[in-house]
Image (cartoon, rainbow, N blue to C red; front, side, top):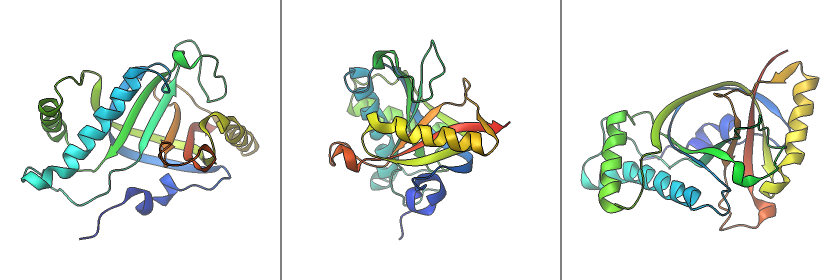
Length: 213
């Protein structure tokens, strides 16, 4: 049976060009973990990764013990994503002063058959396996980003401002304005594993919410 690979099936969402483009992002389901701090150094971020991948693979591998949910199909676990913001400013990916002030929602997309019941069942299974994990900041959420501009950034995360400046110029030239709010944030999708490739080969989708001026 063919596996659904979201990155390949929905190239408009996961494979943009290195030039900015506009997209209308539909509703999607995510398992998410909220936290704060520098992702390079804080334990909270490391635990969030363990939770997200732990829950995602618990659901994916439920077929192995016969507990797969109704509507289950074969699929590839989608890539890690992150929403980034700060309390004291509108964060657009440029105004980075202190990474310890970062607040983030790290998340992994889930197949359409993942309901609250499926999510809670996975949490129970993961908690039994890893009782020390704190799942209190973990949630299942539906997100409809709507109108956005996005770009494929190739290179180190700290070099993202160059791609973001391209997005800002494109937004202005085409009659749009950025539309950041409590529900619409700087969004990154991580297509590469930084443990397995050099910084210059990293691929990251950067997405910003926009509106017509």
